[in-house]
Picture 1 (spheres, helix red, strand yellow):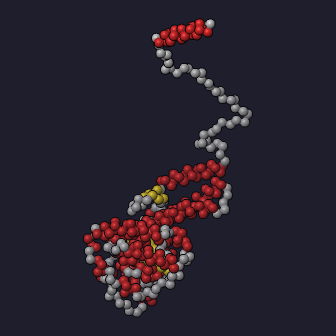
Picture 2 (cartoon, rainbow, N blue to C red; picture 1 turned 180 degrees about the vertical axis):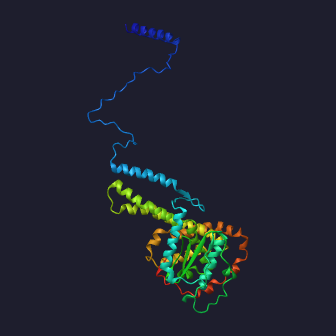
Picture 3 (cartoon, one colour; picture 1 turned 90 degrees about the horizontal axis):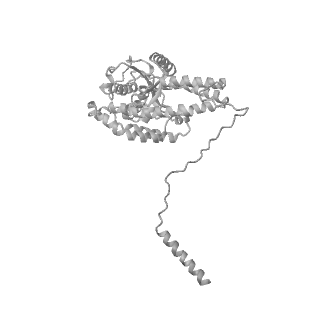
Length: 381
């Protein structure tokens, strides 16, 4: 029985194998079977449901927020409409001072300067005044920036006594240069103030800056920087920005409803200080080029800053506001060194700069008229 059953199983296996040999391969479908799509129906809104309004819909805004939005919109349009580029560098800035306002600001600035500094101003015929006059005239004329206002020699006490003017070159006696803009020069007898500035067409030089300038090349670097501030209209730019700062602070107070002095601090940190530093670096660049075109040695500019850096380290803490609003001396020296190549090219392109070093000989003699700086108050505005 077992053999019979085993034989039947073998015959069945052989028969099944013969059948599968001729079977066709199984075919698979390439089409994706259709699926039932589930559509979810939104739930019915509840009794407290409120449809979301678009961001421009102000119907739900408070009066305070509407006022802020209106002021920002109007102020933004006004701001953009008064943007301009500084011609010398291409920097964008806000400027909304017209010619008439500029003329009024210039007149008022000169009046105040004469009231405050008139008693200390050296007369036009003083050797130092004449020497500074020559340097300023050279820079203005070489760059077609205008001329210094002619002055009649004074008989004030500052000119009492005799002065050896042999070191002054004939250029000191030249008439005012060509150009439409008229500048004024004030040399202030104050050895404790190591400073110089140029604002609204008035160049101011304190005698305390002269020892630090060291020579005519150094003083030309200082004056080039200061004249650059006036050429770039930085004073007018700051005047324009002064209108934005109160508005910016007011918007912060209106938007938040609170103010613990943060709005004023933020407006200063975000707007005033960065712009001031940009202006200083811009004046460094423009002033370097102005002095170079007037045939002065460009390397004198970073050298003056190195001396200012040493003076700063000797008098830490005397003028903190100066350090806040100005870039570090290291930054300015590095930047000036990068610009020296262009400055030398500008000087080389001026045919009048041949053999000019022979004309820069008298400044050290004039320095004998000024004592060393007291180092009490200093700065380079």
